[in-house]
Amino acid sequence: MILAPIKDRTLRASVRRAALPEEDVFHRPADIHEALRFGYPRLLVCRAEDHRTLRREFLTGESSVPVLAIGDPTRRVWEDAWEADGLALSRIDDSALRLRAFLEKAARDSDWVEGIYSDLTQTVGRGLPPEFRGFSRRVLEFPFRYSSLTTLSEAFGLSAGALKARFRRRGLPSPSRYLRWFRLLAAARILANPDETTLTASYRLGFASDGNFCRWVRATSGIPPSALRGWNGRLLLLVRTAEECLPPSSWDAWEAFGGLFLRQVA
View 1 (cartoon, rainbow, N blue to C red):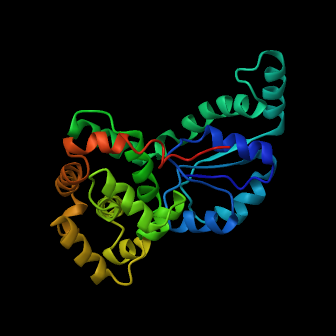
View 2: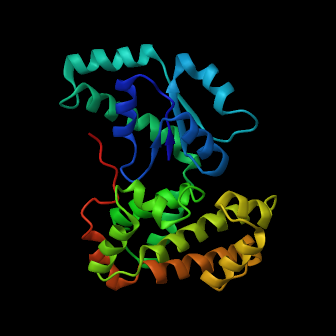
């Protein structure tokens, strides 16, 4: 997830094209505030000229979100380079290509989701389908927002019923099952921090109480929340997630979604 409180339409479009196709990019202040409070954005991108103002507005306290501030002089260099020997057909595409390297370098250490994907890849013995990454990353990075199938399906431009039908036609379990397991991985990340309690974990995931949260964790995974604080418990959860969400029979079905869960950039 990338936060981009940018009013300049050209730079905003470049950020969206430079971002991963499976991740959210938020521009609205309300979305950014919610993401910073409850989610796990890997980067905040802004104009260097707005950096100080935006830091006061969004990054109060000890925020750990890395910031990439793009200055107007840098953009002018990109513009001159594009006019001289552009790397892409359009100015926005060219800027996106140049910006992408900055994004990945700035966000490298904060992208814990890639660590999850790396572990899942090793567990199942092959690269993850792009559609699986597109469906899961949004939930992993923002479990508070995507707490129900209704809110998740809206991110893909579908109703909950239509999303269920897409999975059913491909012989996959209900998307609700995948949603639960991805939220469990997010819960494990929270509980890995010894300073976090089950109460704060339940709050960050949108549960009404820590009792409801603890019962949900145990009922879904068979693992008590306390076990997720340790490496062995998180490893067990990862293995069970792979078994539930990525059995060999599901690979062709995931690949048949045809870009449904990847962000389309106009």
